[in-house]
Length: 192
Image 1 (tube, rainbow, N blue to C red):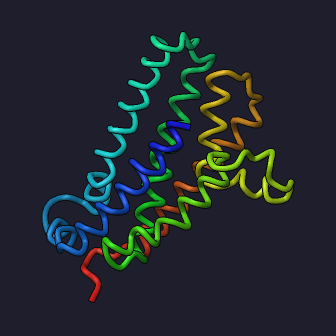
Image 2 (image 1 turned 60 degrees about the horizontal axis):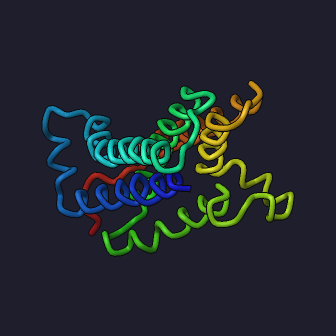
């Protein structure tokens, strides 16, 4: 739950807000005229939120060990892969959302559908078992659901290779679609 919150509010919302604010201030347009590539500029927008998310997750895991006597993850690489792919996917989703977000104030409105779909689809707001089967099946392909499943499986489960492949493939699909949409439609200059 905490990692899902970090991905939605620290990564997604912060990257969205930073991209829109820097665009409207003309910073992104000025950065494009320098030596940095477009990819470097966009990664620099997402990196602070990504680092905060990874560090906060680490701090919370350590606190869980100390205060709650949690066990070590059964597959730490799976947990790490879920976290890192989640950060990249939600950063890309934020940059895609920034393309149609007009002002920093409107980011509160344009982010709401994405956060709602991710929260419901990821089992964060409503357990997927409580949803109708058809809705639950679609919800499994939202950006947050495979992250939650990878983290859960890496921590306490013994997932099958097929499950891990589907979850990882879903996240990689979100990353690829996000990157393609950002490359084709990201707005670098302030909207008039």
